[in-house]
Image (cartoon, rainbow, N blue to C red):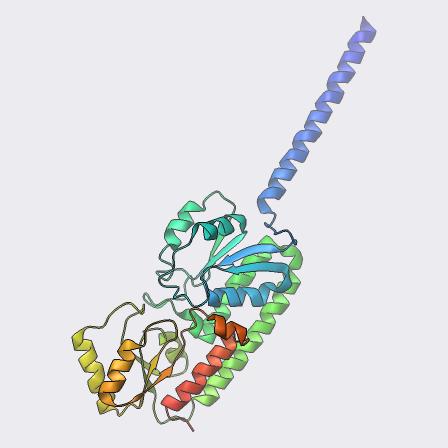
Length: 306
């Protein structure tokens, strides 16, 4: 009887120990699953960026360790874009969703709510960088540096093993942005004019960084039609200042800029807000930096720089 009691006690201890070990391993697994980055079949961390500039910055920092999807298709105006069912599937499978924030992504607030408790981390890369409601921070190299730091911090948070790799790539990106700033500063230092007329109020941060003045025809989105009064004032401004060029952008209709240019007898040039990139540009190997350099070249023409 005593022997049976001892055997039973031993069995209870063994079974209890096994259950304890199992529960411990299960808790470790669950904790690890909560923080482990979501990876694709190739072992890369899955990231979705809402539009091209954020896609580009993230790709530069993440390199071969991540797979980034640019949610806004090539050649599409991101102000108007709404996520498709396929986009939502990609987002839910990703570890990071990178937004500009503010009113740029009209769907941003709702998706933030929808993704609660899914494990997807929403990164607002423009947080704290806006002045008023203007979302176009990526056109200022200085502000892009700040966006890149926010993205770097989040990549390191979900994948600390590759912190050195991400940090080195971020440093390379920072150096490229410093070089771009130097090109703009030297390229715009000796200009006859400091004011430029644009079809879209997208270049305020760029103008502020380099001591220029933007005179926009439309509002913060290309769809914001100017009033008749504003158009009259712009025509008068162009005539009084003897402006020789009006800028329009690739992804929006140039109609307003062409109308004013025709009425006043001046020329139009492209000033790209780089909200997206066309298939043709991608085929030619263009990217954020080459498009910013094209913008500088056209600004130098319009501002009559030496």
